Length: 167
Image (cartoon, rainbow, N blue to C red; front, top):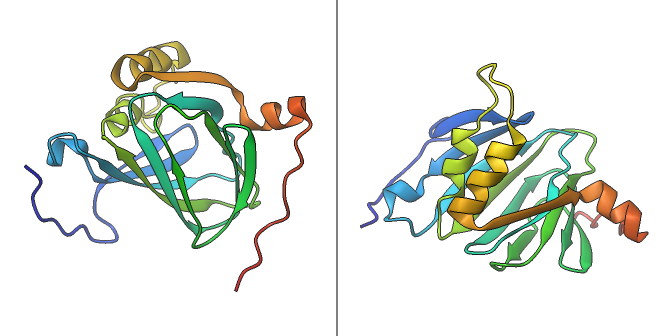
């Protein structure tokens, strides 16, 4: 059963993952697997592969920066205050176009993907094993991967929309 919890700004389990910084604010271990919440600080080079989590939904609340999301066959340019929800099984990818780090709050429902990220952390000098990571993501979350988001955008000739107007 989930317990009430307050996590400070500096609190949570922080670690590096492929040049990004992740902080697990609430692990699925804390709520019988219902969901997880991660503060994801994307480096300016973040370019995730197109992928789908077939057993969990993923949502993003953009705290700062500008990101391009490819969701199924659509492309969106999002910024601070925008929210993106990706249903389970929907292919998606993310490209940071800020020219600087970007912060998001990410929720997986049900949780569990945070454990895959943590198991393959890259901040302790251990080389990243892409094959092992993808195998575990598939086993735990039925996640499928394809090409990087930037390559997908280029291959299909998609036009990146203008950044959102900040109000």
